[in-house]
Length: 145
Image 1 (tube, rainbow, N blue to C red):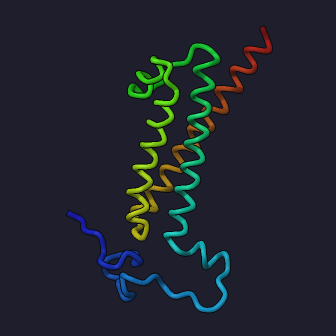
Image 2 (image 1 turned 60 degrees about the vertical axis):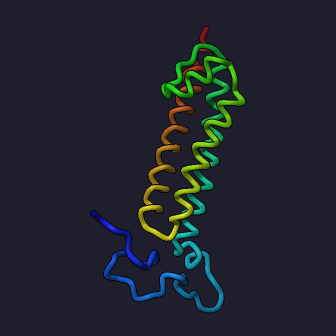
Image 3 (image 1 turned 90 degrees about the horizontal axis):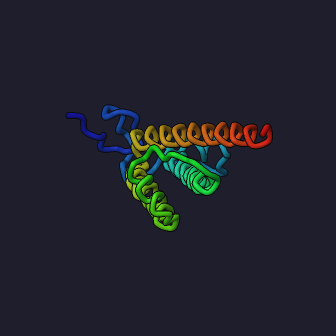
């Protein structure tokens, strides 16, 4: 069983020279590169990106439902969409992302949390690209007929 290192700022369990309570000190004026070098900052930025991309996904899902035939692949979201209750869908999607983001934020100093944030950001970017292709195809079909 793998355990997390005692120092959340260490890359491995062997590299734990700094105190786990304090982040690495940054002397004097902080540059953008130094600021972004801190894992909690990167995790926070990635979680904001995930929230923004989730908002796009929610908006595009509701638009697709209102435009015509649309099949939601998530069975829980599909059952909510079938009732036509978009408020419940909004709370469902925001609640899931908020709960996951809360967990990742609580472990923001650990590398695994940052890896999880990168994976979520890439996944939601892929979903956004898929939505772009969906609406591009829909627009072409609408204007050709």
